[in-house]
Length: 151
Image (cartoon, rainbow, N blue to C red; front, top):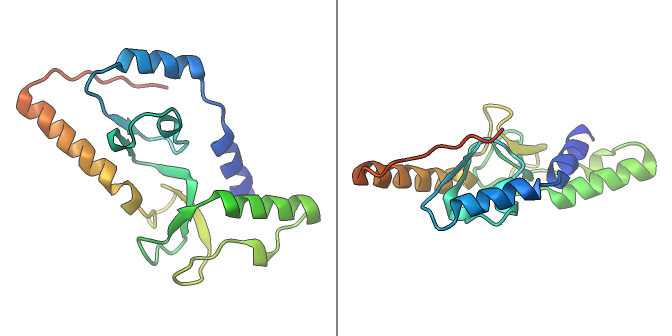
């Protein structure tokens, strides 16, 4: 129940539209890449090009096998979160039959965020590869690089 409530909150955090608009204007047509270590998927939600985002911490929008039995045992969290919270609100308890199970091994699932050494990173590997390629291109062209850290 804790993870379901926390995931729902993380997925519903309102984005600071003014900040995102200002960032979009600042980026404009510039060559950019987003390296994000938050799991709220703000840049995805704000419409930034997903090929130019690396989400190192994962995303609350997904669940994964707690044992990481398979790199493909990652799936959207919304349906499971909705079922758990509906069950909790209706019965004041979460029953085992509404908890999400891994489709590969039948084990428990946890949020697909960097919580343990069992974090399933494959979903984010393309973003990491794209980031590395982009940095190599920047270095080869000797283009000046500006790094902006948002807090």
